[in-house]
Length: 174
Image (cartoon, rainbow, N blue to C red; front, top):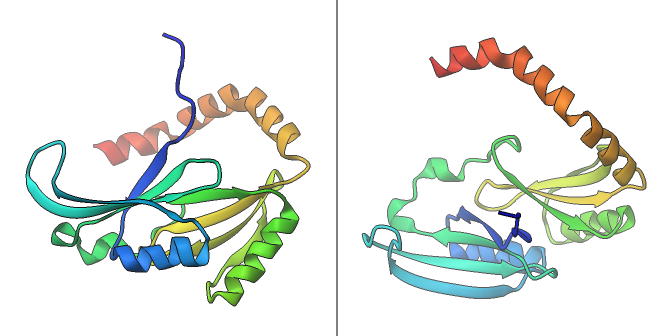
């Protein structure tokens, strides 16, 4: 079978409160609500579990979505997560636009870190009200050459990393 995947339709996360989440994604980031679905049961199990599933639309037609399900929410769901554990990265048009985003977000009361220069991209980082790290990134002029170079070295890097970390990972799985 040939790969027919054409993109990410949506990434979905739990939220503490749909209204609070809407204020961040629509009010601060400018992503309009595309849909808000009220559902009484989990689709996979049929178990009673009322929730709202809210979708915010990005300019490219993809979405970021959230589940507001207070009956199953626990405080630990909303602790700020390390970016290695989960984050979402939105892309803007240019490094100049990235700086504009930082200024706009500061004016809207959103604390950001960065820009951080990763050489192939520059990024700013913040947290949404649910503890999800949000990144806005812009490709630099070196993006394509760096990515091409890294792609050419991917197999060797992954093989070396697998060998280097095998003992530690085996210990963690025991």
